[in-house]
Length: 163
Ligand code: FES
Image (cartoon, rainbow, N blue to C red; front, top):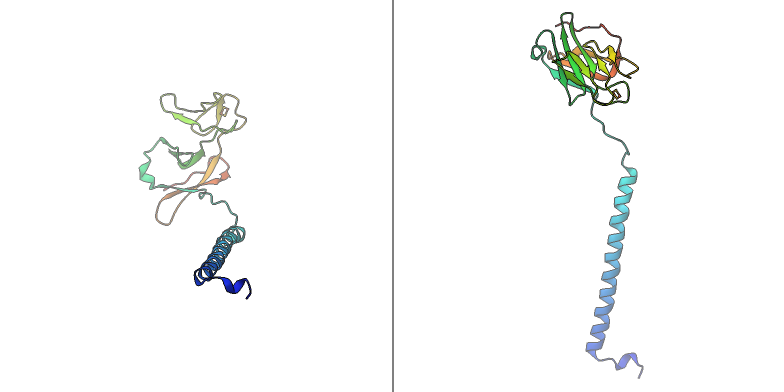
């Protein structure tokens, strides 16, 4: 009689159970490997793009801004000026090294906290190391009557939006 036939039914049962457990372990390993491959495959195939916020800021209705006012929108990084000629917007980013400037109403100037550059309400530099004035940004009225500012489009100064 061969060695294999000497096994009791319990031992045969144990062999089958062990074999089954190895098969299950192998299948589980394949499933884990498949999930990993699917995850990396998805990341490889999905577009690798950077979603940036729109450069266009909706700053609301013109009547929010009183005549002869300068309003800082720190979130958008811009100033909205309601001058006698109409509306315009300035970038609040200093042209020296890119710090965010701040409106000082008591002095009537826009000041940079980093190296002391100062600008007037038209963005013209009046003091400090900034090499250029604050840029004027494109402003227009939407169909709904909101003022929109395109922070990515610099325009020549003295272009006003009348409402
Ligand atoms: S970054 Fe504004 S003065 Fe230097």
